[in-house]
Length: 553
Image (cartoon, rainbow, N blue to C red):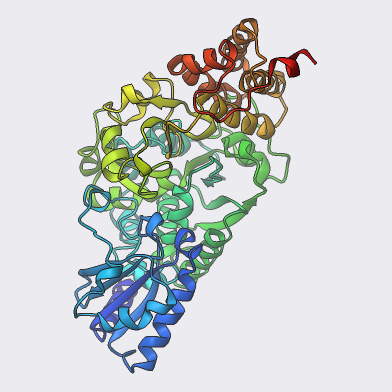
């Protein structure tokens, strides 16, 4: 597809949309689909057709609107695409009321207040198209400035200039470690091999995390564009998206997006009339958490068992089939198109000194507004939980927030006023991770929480290295003793030693970070450990403490 053909496609789509006075957007991401949004969409389409309004009102499925707790979400927009009203909890039975309200009086019983902080305080870069475009139509992505960044790179910028722009942006990898993206790209670009690869890590395995899934379901072309720009900048010509098989909707929309991009010449050979070639394939993961680690992921793509290997060499030097390989996660690639469209300096102006841009978080657990938010780096944790998140339901008291999945730590109330960025979170013993935030209230037992995550790490350990394979099992056994009231002070000392051992000697990030939930709960909630061991009581009333006679038996 040439620049002229791209512009022609945009004009055709714009002209087609001018026919409609209103559009009714229905969220068809996984969260709302679980509340039967597909039935809502069908009912609205039937109602519009039955009323003879199908030439005036366009009904379409769109990506995630964010507030999953209120789904299915439906939004009515006018001819200029300006939002008129958002409805929550819309079922098929409401179709007649919703259609009749287009451009008229809203259905007050269904109105979702979009002036609340959950919506008003977000700054959307990664999620800018979510809830606005149909994820299954490349035309809508292109009209929303899609593939313009790729076009700019191919026509105006040398590969080295693209890398410089990404470096200037200060973007850090959103997969968890926060490694500078520009530095990783530069390393792959400098490699002399003829064959190089680009891999998108979509193996999102953290409990309570759904950021990458939502982006793939809502805006798959955005990720493909980011990968294509990365391939051009680093000299790669083949790409792989490694997505877990438990995300069937994301996989379906990704494959559909790849076919569409190939059909119009945006992927494949001679992209946009240039000599640049880039093809993308989707590879499915079988659900092993350890395959989120880049070397284990590479082994899995190669058809081998997904186990990590020592580094160096790093994948940027020797990765997929021994070739230089660039690996970034979904959110990292989704940041690339706007960075190239608006410039690295623009992106660097958002966030903090060492953590630039925005971050997408999945709010889950004991919080009123469960869902997806995107906020500038540096926003206070209190604001995320109590302002955007709406606070703790049922009048309960906040206890902790767990960030970074099983590899993260539990952050107590005393740090609610800290800025949320890579360095601040690391200082209190946790990690940013991919962006999961699980909020806990006073009904949570922190020892039980640590045990839950340790059981997860134990079962997901690949078993390749002894510290992780044996250490996680021993730590889990001790935590079981704590929760049933049979642990001794000596075993708590052993637990602390095991934490240090795993962090120091494990082969990969899974084992190195597995102690984080234990370390943070022991540091900030030591009184709960003591209550289980010395007082034979669970303060939250969660754990079943064994009676003295049971212990003797």
